[in-house]
Amino acid sequence: MSAHKVLKELGQAMNTPTVKTATATLTRDDMASGIVIAAHPSSAIALTLPPPAQCINDAPCLIADGGAAAVTVLSDAGSVGFGGAGGSYDTLTFARGDAALVFAREVSGTAYWFYVHATVAAG
Image 1 (cartoon, helix red, strand yellow):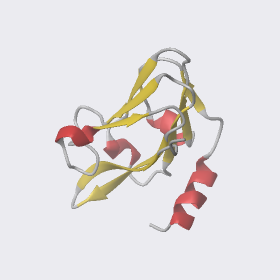
Image 2 (cartoon, rainbow, N blue to C red):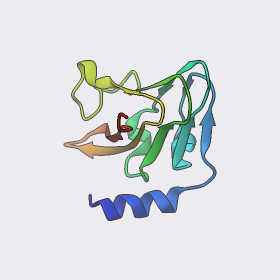
Image 3 (cartoon, rainbow, N blue to C red):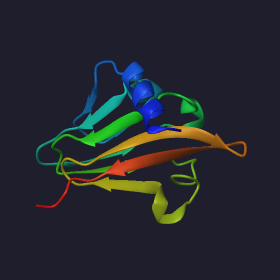
């Protein structure tokens, strides 16, 4: 998938961003907003993704740390981690300002979560 197509799909999907101020399990509707922002000035937030099969071929969703103390994004309990890797690959951990583009795709008949993670430069 080209970067142009990803940005086009993301732009078409954008509605009002979903803002989470506490740990939550995201729904397909949350993901369909196009942007999920985790925002709490003093608490860490854990966001669990819905099953990837529910979101196959939906537009990607940008999940961002919008000022939370820390954000952890977890693949749902029924998944085998991001990209089917399992083990330590079932979580993403963000520092303040980090973001990831998250999307679900089917590979060889199995639905998986994938991501492109952007980190803030040190300095």
